Image 1 (cartoon, rainbow, N blue to C red):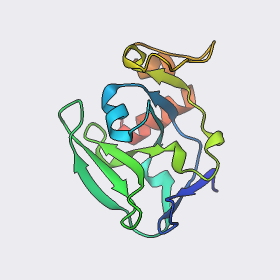
Image 2: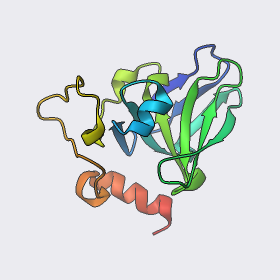
Image 3: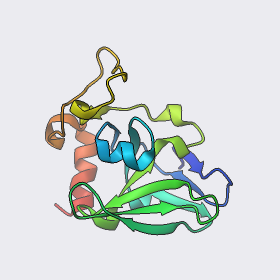
Image 4: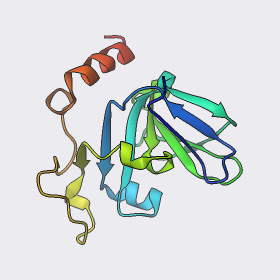
Length: 156
């Protein structure tokens, strides 16, 4: 069953999310700002097996990351749009899907704003939104369902 569909600008690559995300991050770190060319990155964290390719094959590009462990960015080989990333910590098991590539990005609003200490000064985080200066402990933020899925993902 599909939760949401998405893809690149030229439609050479299409995918679908088979469930709701574990969590959606709005990351305001300077690394994400540089990498996205925007004030923040909006990523839906998904188990890789729940991100199903329907069409095309993304090109995987290895890039550095703030952690020093690097990341792999999956891009359309035609229009070069970044569709998702995999970070070294979870390897291929967890994808950070770019919410802006969803057909209906409104389906995945941010659950939490992270690294707000380095946000652009003109960005206003909505009143009542969950926000932290840096990162957080998953056990304190994620839903019980997402934590259970995470345990399965990590084999714990």
